[in-house]
Length: 621
Image (tube, rainbow, N blue to C red):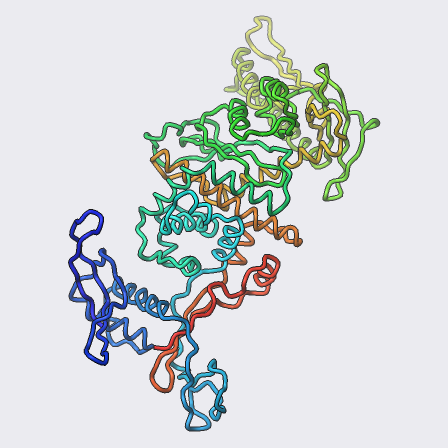
């Protein structure tokens, strides 16, 4: 073998360039010809003085020989040798390896029956056990599950229908699978695909030869076709799971940037849900159906008003009149509720009303999945809407703990001000004390609203002599009715239990956002180009769709694990090459996946996945 450098020209532009090939001389009946074993491309940049050593190392790897030159090769040359040898082995068709003769009954280091009769299975070979090596381990478990979910939805076929060619499809699939398996930047994803993942073997694509910029362009293509892809994937989910999208869940979250993002118009400072108000933000809005599948996503500016986004999202969704919209209090303004009524929508929201009421005697009860009893009072308001006051024991404990903490914090301020009246340097000026009390009320409004504070003054009315306070629970507050919250709806004919269970679906949306941000790389954002920013978020949304698809299928089988748990279980499986030397000096290469662990195998059986992704490839050299 040797490396040939060949000048050539582009067929399209006619521009000259140089290509490199790994070539071997082959003797035929008439002459000796040179056959190309591997095209090394036009970007082969190994110094020419290392070419002979590289070829020699490739030959050693192919024939499973102990290396005599490894120490003289650079790390780059060693990596190339491993890569090219693996490609040459993969290019040879998988074959049944003919057995070698065994002249003696027992041979040290041999693996087979010595006196095997003619016609024995060709799986049995005489090999040197000391020559066995395991090389090129690549992760395959998560990639196999992710790709299976994609193909079940016809994702690759849809990309082809949208006009993407094979390399573009491979890059887009890789971007989404990487977000599911090892969420990171495009740079880190590129390294993961080249050095750690076996995804290329499953889709027959060489990621080690792929340029980093192709991943960035894949992000652009996905974002360009976002509406068509979202509609296609949701339609597939409807078909697979028999969904009836009569309920729409709507909520928003935000993510933050690393960097100044001067060229990203939507990067604005606002209220960060991750307490990162020191960074520019971006808002992601999602509409989902009751089963948790995303129907539509959209990116808004980081300082977008949550209520102002509802109309835009529902109009883009083309939701059918009569559909029920479930959303949290932050979006449920009077203007939005009026718009929903005028456009024929039903709604179920958490009310913004501060006043609470609850009558335990007239309450109905419903059991939760955890056998907790929720009590509910139904009240009709002046607008003809149902107000459903719900009491939760768990929420009562939470409310009491918060109220006690807020009250204790306000009382601590009062105690400190009172103690200061008897200290030489303590504040005694009435104006100063009143100012500090005002700050305390602003800092702890939930606790301070229940207190009456009296400041006793001297004859001049300028100096405070004493501070006293008394607590009286404010009517209609959370402290007066701990554990009570109010739902508001125009669904007049739906019973209390159904209303409550429908609203609880909104907690699924909160779990979606947690999964997006913690498991699927939604935050932070490092891009500084607007289309790349929105592409980054959309890749996470696509990854969530396939994650949710896998989890939904497993939930039907009784497995409710989070994606992080499932990913950890699946990630153990590796695809490796076993190389060994036969008695006749020839090398056998067998590439296959490791056996799944018992938990992984159970998941495979439930999902109908093959235990050996990629199959077995046997090569004799």
